[in-house]
Amino acid sequence: MARTDDGPRPAPRMEHAAVRLVIVAAEFHRELADRLLEGAKARLFEAGMDESRIDVHRVPGAFELPLAAQLLAARGRYAGVVALGAVIRGETAHFDLVSEAAVMGLSRVSLDTRVPCTLGLLTCDTYEQALARSGGAVGNAGADAADAAVVLANLRADVS
Image 1 (spheres, helix red, strand yellow):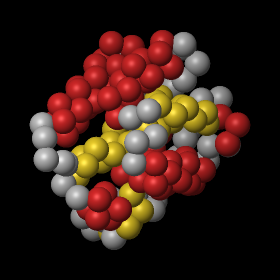
Image 2 (cartoon, rainbow, N blue to C red; image 1 turned 135 degrees about the horizontal axis):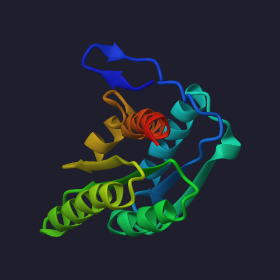
Image 3 (cartoon, rainbow, N blue to C red; image 1 turned 180 degrees about the horizontal axis):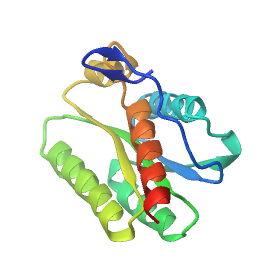
Protein backbone atom coordinates (compact mmCIF):
# COMPACT_ATOMS: atom_id res chain seq x y z
CA MET A 1 0.00 0.00 0.00
CA ALA A 2 1.09 3.53 -0.67
CA ARG A 3 1.62 5.68 2.39
CA THR A 4 0.85 9.19 3.47
CA ASP A 5 2.01 10.96 6.60
CA ASP A 6 -1.02 9.37 8.27
CA GLY A 7 -0.22 5.80 7.15
CA PRO A 8 -1.43 3.51 4.33
CA ARG A 9 -4.11 4.73 1.94
CA PRO A 10 -6.34 2.74 -0.42
CA ALA A 11 -5.55 2.66 -4.13
CA PRO A 12 -7.50 5.07 -6.34
CA ARG A 13 -9.92 3.27 -8.69
CA MET A 14 -9.37 3.23 -12.43
CA GLU A 15 -12.68 4.59 -13.67
CA HIS A 16 -12.22 3.80 -17.36
CA ALA A 17 -11.96 0.10 -18.23
CA ALA A 18 -10.37 0.57 -21.65
CA VAL A 19 -7.41 2.61 -20.38
CA ARG A 20 -3.91 1.29 -20.98
CA LEU A 21 -0.85 2.30 -18.98
CA VAL A 22 2.82 1.61 -19.59
CA ILE A 23 5.59 1.22 -17.06
CA VAL A 24 9.17 2.08 -18.02
CA ALA A 25 11.74 0.69 -15.59
CA ALA A 26 15.47 1.37 -15.54
CA GLU A 27 17.78 -1.66 -15.41
CA PHE A 28 20.50 0.08 -13.40
CA HIS A 29 20.09 -0.92 -9.73
CA ARG A 30 17.95 -3.82 -10.98
CA GLU A 31 16.94 -5.03 -7.49
CA LEU A 32 15.50 -1.63 -6.66
CA ALA A 33 13.78 -1.28 -10.03
CA ASP A 34 12.20 -4.72 -9.61
CA ARG A 35 10.87 -3.76 -6.18
CA LEU A 36 9.45 -0.52 -7.60
CA LEU A 37 7.91 -2.44 -10.51
CA GLU A 38 6.34 -4.97 -8.15
CA GLY A 39 4.86 -2.13 -6.08
CA ALA A 40 3.54 -0.30 -9.14
CA LYS A 41 1.91 -3.37 -10.64
CA ALA A 42 0.35 -4.39 -7.32
CA ARG A 43 -1.20 -0.92 -6.95
CA LEU A 44 -2.51 -0.94 -10.52
CA PHE A 45 -4.16 -4.31 -9.84
CA GLU A 46 -5.66 -2.86 -6.63
CA ALA A 47 -6.95 0.05 -8.71
CA GLY A 48 -8.88 -2.45 -10.82
CA MET A 49 -6.59 -2.66 -13.82
CA ASP A 50 -6.22 -5.93 -15.66
CA GLU A 51 -2.68 -7.13 -16.41
CA SER A 52 -3.50 -7.14 -20.13
CA ARG A 53 -3.84 -3.34 -19.98
CA ILE A 54 -0.39 -2.78 -18.46
CA ASP A 55 2.75 -2.94 -20.61
CA VAL A 56 6.29 -2.95 -19.22
CA HIS A 57 9.45 -1.79 -20.98
CA ARG A 58 13.01 -1.74 -19.63
CA VAL A 59 15.72 0.80 -20.38
CA PRO A 60 19.40 0.82 -19.32
CA GLY A 61 19.19 3.55 -16.68
CA ALA A 62 17.43 6.60 -15.31
CA PHE A 63 18.93 8.88 -17.96
CA GLU A 64 17.08 6.89 -20.65
CA LEU A 65 13.67 7.08 -18.95
CA PRO A 66 12.55 10.38 -20.56
CA LEU A 67 13.21 9.29 -24.14
CA ALA A 68 11.48 5.95 -23.61
CA ALA A 69 8.54 7.72 -21.97
CA GLN A 70 8.32 10.19 -24.84
CA LEU A 71 8.42 7.47 -27.51
CA LEU A 72 5.71 5.48 -25.72
CA ALA A 73 3.52 8.50 -24.98
CA ALA A 74 3.71 9.60 -28.62
CA ARG A 75 2.22 6.30 -29.78
CA GLY A 76 -1.22 7.42 -28.62
CA ARG A 77 -1.85 4.00 -27.08
CA TYR A 78 -1.35 4.87 -23.42
CA ALA A 79 -3.25 7.08 -20.99
CA GLY A 80 -0.18 7.31 -18.77
CA VAL A 81 3.45 6.38 -18.32
CA VAL A 82 4.88 5.25 -14.98
CA ALA A 83 8.65 5.84 -14.87
CA LEU A 84 10.65 3.79 -12.34
CA GLY A 85 14.30 3.69 -11.38
CA ALA A 86 16.93 4.66 -8.85
CA VAL A 87 19.92 6.96 -8.75
CA ILE A 88 22.23 6.58 -5.75
CA ARG A 89 24.60 9.38 -4.80
CA GLY A 90 28.26 8.64 -5.42
CA GLU A 91 31.48 10.59 -5.16
CA THR A 92 31.03 12.64 -8.34
CA ALA A 93 28.51 15.04 -9.87
CA HIS A 94 27.05 12.18 -11.93
CA PHE A 95 24.18 11.77 -9.41
CA ASP A 96 23.10 15.40 -9.77
CA LEU A 97 23.35 15.41 -13.55
CA VAL A 98 21.44 12.17 -14.08
CA SER A 99 18.78 12.95 -11.47
CA GLU A 100 18.06 16.41 -12.84
CA ALA A 101 18.06 15.27 -16.48
CA ALA A 102 15.68 12.41 -15.71
CA VAL A 103 13.24 14.42 -13.60
CA MET A 104 13.17 17.41 -15.95
CA GLY A 105 12.89 15.14 -18.99
CA LEU A 106 9.97 13.20 -17.51
CA SER A 107 8.20 16.43 -16.63
CA ARG A 108 8.69 17.67 -20.17
CA VAL A 109 7.21 14.45 -21.57
CA SER A 110 3.99 15.07 -19.64
CA LEU A 111 3.72 18.66 -20.74
CA ASP A 112 4.75 18.13 -24.37
CA THR A 113 2.64 15.03 -25.05
CA ARG A 114 -0.25 15.68 -22.64
CA VAL A 115 0.16 12.07 -21.52
CA PRO A 116 0.77 11.90 -17.77
CA CYS A 117 4.25 10.65 -16.95
CA THR A 118 4.57 9.90 -13.26
CA LEU A 119 7.74 9.86 -11.22
CA GLY A 120 8.79 6.67 -9.47
CA LEU A 121 12.47 7.59 -9.59
CA LEU A 122 14.35 7.28 -6.32
CA THR A 123 17.15 9.80 -5.78
CA CYS A 124 18.80 8.67 -2.57
CA ASP A 125 22.08 9.18 -0.77
CA THR A 126 22.46 5.48 0.09
CA TYR A 127 21.32 2.10 -1.11
CA GLU A 128 19.68 1.55 2.29
CA GLN A 129 17.54 4.67 1.80
CA ALA A 130 16.50 3.35 -1.61
CA LEU A 131 15.54 -0.03 -0.13
CA ALA A 132 13.37 1.72 2.44
CA ARG A 133 11.60 3.62 -0.37
CA SER A 134 11.15 0.63 -2.68
CA GLY A 135 8.93 -1.49 -0.50
CA GLY A 136 10.60 -1.04 2.87
CA ALA A 137 9.76 0.99 5.94
CA VAL A 138 9.11 4.23 4.05
CA GLY A 139 6.78 2.73 1.42
CA ASN A 140 7.12 2.09 -2.29
CA ALA A 141 7.68 4.95 -4.72
CA GLY A 142 6.54 2.66 -7.54
CA ALA A 143 3.14 2.30 -5.86
CA ASP A 144 2.94 6.07 -5.39
CA ALA A 145 3.75 6.65 -9.07
CA ALA A 146 1.09 4.11 -10.07
CA ASP A 147 -1.48 5.91 -7.90
CA ALA A 148 -0.62 9.20 -9.60
CA ALA A 149 -0.94 7.58 -13.04
CA VAL A 150 -4.43 6.28 -12.22
CA VAL A 151 -5.61 9.64 -10.90
CA LEU A 152 -4.21 11.52 -13.91
CA ALA A 153 -5.48 8.95 -16.44
CA ASN A 154 -8.96 9.32 -14.94
CA LEU A 155 -8.69 13.09 -15.14
CA ARG A 156 -7.41 12.97 -18.70
CA ALA A 157 -10.33 10.75 -19.78
CA ASP A 158 -12.83 12.99 -18.00
CA VAL A 159 -11.64 16.21 -19.66
CA SER A 160 -10.87 14.85 -23.14
